[in-house]
Amino acid sequence: MRKYETVFIADPDLQDQTRTNLFEKVRNIIDNEGGILTNFEEWGNKKLAYEIKKKLRGHYVCVTYGGTGELIKELERNFRLSDDVLKFMTILLSDDVTAEQLEKEVQEAQDESKQADETDKKSVENKTSVDEASADDEKVEETEDKTE
Image (cartoon, rainbow, N blue to C red; front, side, top):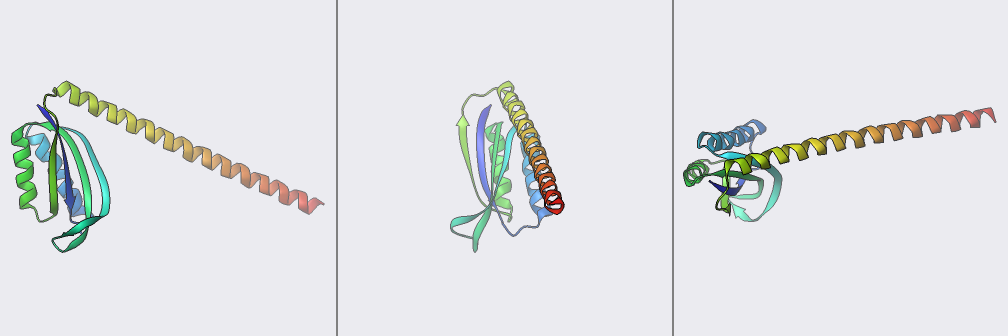
């Protein structure tokens, strides 16, 4: 099994549902061809270096996965057939990768995202408590001003 990274540019004018269907189709192709998806990262809308299909912007997506050459053929065939994909490029990251290594990467990525979510929740809670404390301080100062 080999590890690949595919970056593709989707039409930025797609409806959210159409874009979601395109992303789901990519995930399904990887699953159906026996691949292991390790990372699906949306980079968002960005300005293109040059005009493609009369578009100046594109919605960038980076997909990292493990699979065979047949998976690449099928994925790129679908990209060519789809009017929703402006450009794509596939890069071979590693020649010899085991399924266990890829699954370990997936697990590590999930653990990192959970830690990031917990950190975000804590920072929101801390900010809320700081805001509440400063609001209480303001009330105390107002009360002191009124009593003087």
